[in-house]
Length: 366
Image (cartoon, rainbow, N blue to C red; front, side, top):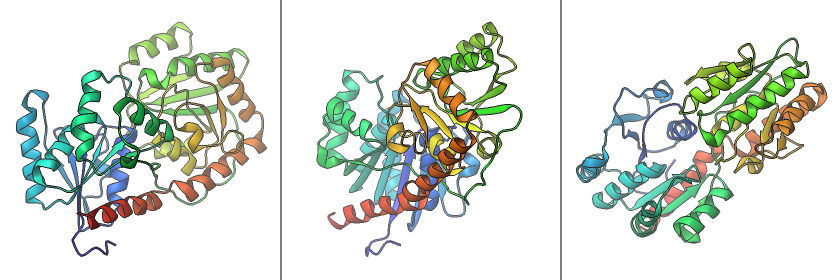
């Protein structure tokens, strides 16, 4: 618990509770934090409930304050008043637009400890996004947490954030008891989790599945997620006659049963922060085949906790999956090592304690 004399009243600000890694990380963290008051402030209405049922409402207050760009000044003051009314002394925001709204509102409300979590590289940013980062947000933030070294270096280079306001802190996930070793019998079930967007490069994964099917491997790939590439991926599946092999399951809020019933977790990403889905697969003791993208190699070591291949290479991805499928000893060794790694480095309890340390240490100087 907080040993500081002042109460620790924390509010995490995020765009919505739709299904996604940053959203899941926000909820898991706030559920686990030790604080006097804990809030999640969603900047959308309560109709967006993808992960709503995962918020522990017995200890967390969930508030919806919908915002619009055209009313940004009014909305920022509205959020600032919320901070004042609830005596918030730590504001923690997630991703670009919540950073903008939350940091400005915290400044107006006089909140002294303002932390952001940087979950991705954000290649979509234009010059004015970087200008806002450099001249408006960074000067009034206490710390900007990056979930991987890759993201931290990007923030330094692209947003000119000084090193003393940046730190790397991994995501955390809920870890249960160690899973039992298993053997694959019958149809091989591959699982991929993530939004249907270009960064995940699902076309490469579908091409890898096609190669495996053509070589005689009996498998199913289930992809959990929604996004703007749904139509493209549907078309690829039909054109390559993979309807019996590739299933686009849409957005799924409760992924636990999918992890438990699948054989191998796969990622084909070309850009990543530190994927929450990867941590969840590790916590379920799944063998992992993934790409050397973003924070993935920082999270799982090639040949120890995973098999990693170069991005955008369907042949390499297919070969790696085939290698794991054909070698039960390798499959179980990767799964066991991945579970041990997540227990040691990425449990939500250890990550939350580190975060509390940042909050409390920052409050001492304010």
